[in-house]
Length: 370
Image (cartoon, rainbow, N blue to C red; front, side):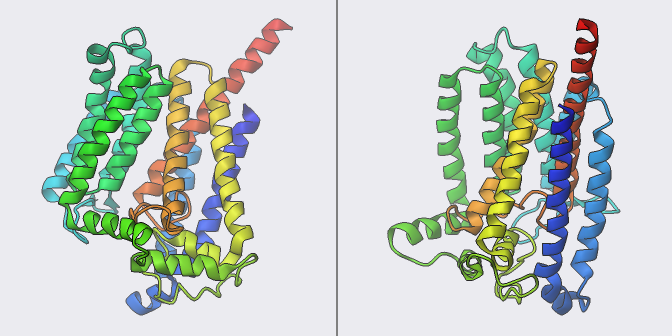
C-alpha cells in the first residue's frame, strides 16, 4: 500500500508539473493581449498549484477517520454556500458559480462534490443493513445527492450537476445499493436533467449543435472545431513545445477547458497517450487502494475520490476530442483553475492517507503473525 501511495503522489505531481508547462504555453498570448503580461495567468496558476501540493501533502498526514465525524456538518456548510451562491454570486458568462471570499474567488460546487462523497461513504456504511430498502435506505441517501445537484443545476451548471449525480450513483452501487434502484433513478435523472438542459439557451445550443454535427454532417461549435484542428495538427510526435498555433487566440480560453488540445498539438499522439496512461495509472492505483483499505468507510471514500477524478478527466478529454458536447469542465491537475485544484488535491491527499494507514495495519498484522 505504501508503494501505491507513492505512485498516486508522484503521478499527480507529474500531471501538475505538465499542467504548469501547458498553462504557460496556452495562456501566454492571451495574457500578453489581455493583461500586457505574458506570465500573468501562469503566475496565478503557479501559486495555486503550490497551494494544491501543500494541501495534498497536508491531508496525506491527516487521519481520514476524522472526516467521518464532521461529514454532515461539512455537507450542510457546502449546501449553505450553494444557496448563498444562487443569491449573491455575480453572473459571468450566463451563470453565477463563484463567490468572493476576499483572497480568492471560490466555487462552492467543488467543495460540495467532495463533501458529498465523504458523507455518502459514511452513510453507506451506517445504512448497509437497510440500503436495499428504497424508502429508508436508498432514498434517504439520494436526498442529499438531489439537493446538491439541484442547487448546482440552478446556477446554472448542468455539467457539474450531472457528473455529481453520476459519481454519487456509482458510489452508491459499489456501496451495496440495488441495481434496479440505480437504474430507475438514472433514467429519471436523465429525463429531468435533459429537460432542464433544454430550458437554458447555452446548454440547448451546445446539445443541439452536437447532435446536428453527428446526424446532419454539420460543423461542431467553434471551440470544439479549433480543438480538433489542434489535435489533428499534432500528428504522431507533435509540433513541439511552444509551437502551437491554436494558442494564438484561435482556440478561446485554451489554457482552461481545452488545454488537452494544446497538449495534443504540441506533443502529438505520443504525448496525448502518455497523459491518458498517467490518468489510468491513477485510476488503477486508486482502485487498488480502495480494495485493500482497512475498513468499509475508507474503501468507499477511496473509490469515490478516484472515480470522481477519472470521470472529470474522461469528460474533459472527450469534449476536446469532439466526442461529447462542450461542458466547461477542467482537466484535473492540468487545466488553469483555482478551487478545482485545491479540492481535487485535498481528495488525493485523503486517498494517500488511506493507503498509508492501511499499510500501517498490514505491517502490524505481519509483526503479530511473526
